[in-house]
Image (cartoon, rainbow, N blue to C red; front, side):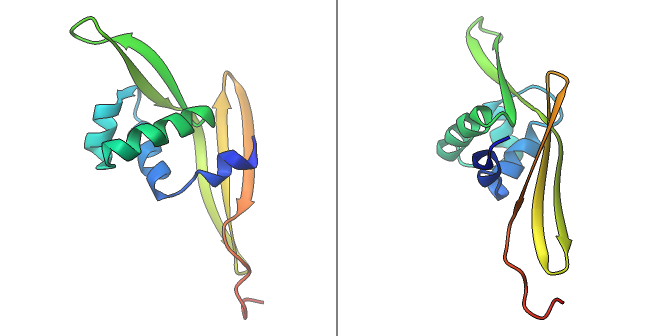
Length: 113
């Protein structure tokens, strides 16, 4: 997993991933669950799909038109704080293969020794 993937993890991404974690959902459903503005939502959905954190699957809606549903591929997203340092850990499970990535999300806090 590349560091680019980790760099897109922010509050908006976490909100979208949480909204899509219960199963395949449309962008409209994610918007309703998350209140992320639609203009932001579609850009972020594309980035999360490109990063492999969401999977987009085409399906027919009730009017027999194609629409995409989104599924979260995350197995785990964890923030660890230890000795004044914060790290984010992302674990994805794609097609039975587990990938893990980690990055620091802040600097060492003075006086935390």
